[in-house]
Every structure is written in structure tokens, then in C-alpha cells.
Length: 196
Image (cartoon, rainbow, N blue to C red; front, side, top):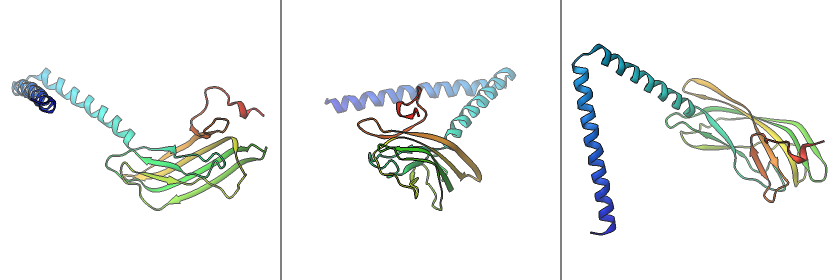
């Protein structure tokens, strides 16, 4: 026999083995339930409740959208959009509004932009598991390369008749590296170029 046949045969044997174990466990559970034992009945109710709660906690993550940086241009920090991803497996996101608060953007020449806000809305829906790019480029432009920056992105959206909000997700421009880019989150220690 070839390697592929041996591999497929071992997978088939594993499936048969675990299938038999599941069948025996189901028969054992069925016998316990048929006995109508009060204690066993409550044990299964509690286990079902725990399983349901764990499932609901997992689904709560699926009802969130995540924001990430897509790419970076060393000469213009806002040239590329940011990405909003729908984590749901079943539900679409609609009525997406976003706000980009450019707290600070510093160029190598010393020019600084502070407190520039971009509001926008997307009429299109984001299908389950898909990503839509949002632009945070403002009408204010300072020539790069940029050495430091901080932008806070907030989004609100509707999913399954509920409104959700992801507020003030920080992205910091790491401009002193060989590959400048937006980094999500705060730095554990102060960034060297942010000292005034």
C-alpha cells in the first residue's frame, strides 16, 4: 500500500473508533435519562445551561467588528485606508458610521497636525466574514515622511436590530523604523518621538 492509502486508512479507523465511542456514550446517556432519575436529570440540565452560556459568550465575539491597519506609505501616513472586519459568521453589518480623530501627526520637517476629525458613513453592508476599507484621510495634508502620530478610530454599526459601538481604538504611527506603519494599541513605554 502507498502512503496515501495508509494515511486514509488510519483516518478511517480513527473515525470509526471515535464514532463507536460517541455511540456508546449516547446509549449510556439515553439509559440514564430513561431511568428518570431526578439527580441525573438535573445534572444534564446544569450541563446544558453551562454549554449554552459558553456558546453565548463565544457568539458575543462574533457580533463585534474589528479595526486594523491595511498597509502603510512611508511618505503619507493617511494614504491607505483602515479595515473594518465583520467577525460574524451569519449576520451582516449595516449602517456603518466611523469617526477618525487624528490627535497628532508630526512630519520629519517639524510640521504638526492636531485634532483633525473625519466623519463618514458607508451605506453598503458588510457581509459576514468580509472586510470593508474606510478612509481617514483628511483635507489637511502635511508632507511626509512622518515621524509620529496618533489616530483614534470609532465606529458604530447595526447588526441584528442592535446598535454596536467600537470606541476610540488607538493606532500609533511608528515612523522611525525601516518600515513605518500604523501599530494598533498603545506602547508599553513612551514612544521616543512623542516627548515634547
